[in-house]
Image 1 (tube, rainbow, N blue to C red):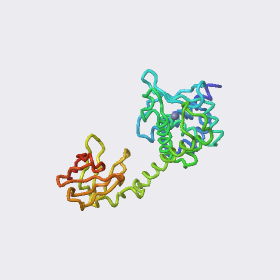
Image 2: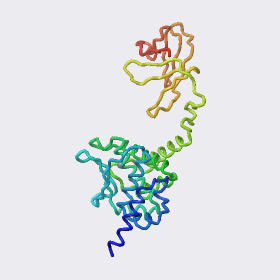
Image 3: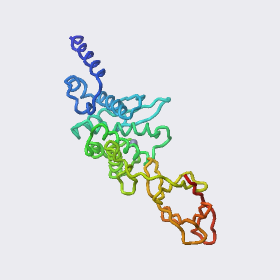
Image 4: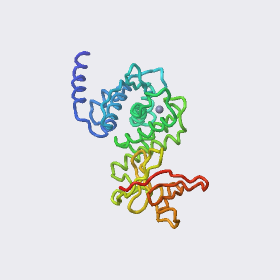
Length: 289
Ligand SMILES: [Zn+2]
């Protein structure tokens, strides 16, 4: 009897896993096989969620997803050079009960994957900033997977006290990080990468005329044809930080303003620190592009 029951299940399972996976299948799966056979176990939910999340990153999953009843929620760690994601099965099922959706479990696991992919699990300690990076990643991925913003925030709203590290930022700060990731993904999908008023719109891109290099400082600034000082942040987003204009002062050809600090630029395009009258020195150089 057992054989007759388990054999079709095995076939169905093989068919199920060999089918191309469509967007939102994880939560909107209409397959009777998936709903009846698989969806109620934490093991299946966790493994499937991790595999699905990784599909949206474009990376190959190398994580071992294991249950561990001794932990409170879920945790990412490395042991013997292998990346693990461990979860408490009761926690995963409780999330589903509380939120009436799988999205909460997905977001918790996405958070843990975020720790791995951001390199946090290579460190001795996970910082508060690391937690926000993992939250941001979970928000980003859940948008791509089709979750609404409230679905994306559901896990943290339901169980904000059950987290993977002892120290963690306040729930409202974490929710903001999740939302930041969610909106970032939305902007990318809708091709609105530069909608902020302080950013350059891609349709209105200007030519750069100079590179600004400061001595002993690795960041570059650019001057565009509209005399704006542009800096690219860590996400490559152009941000206007100041301006350059012709100088009335005989000593300088231009006056350069960056982050409300004024510099003088001489005819050789050397940048002078003019903020201390007793100590005026060359601090950088403009280079024509
Ligand atoms: Zn964490």
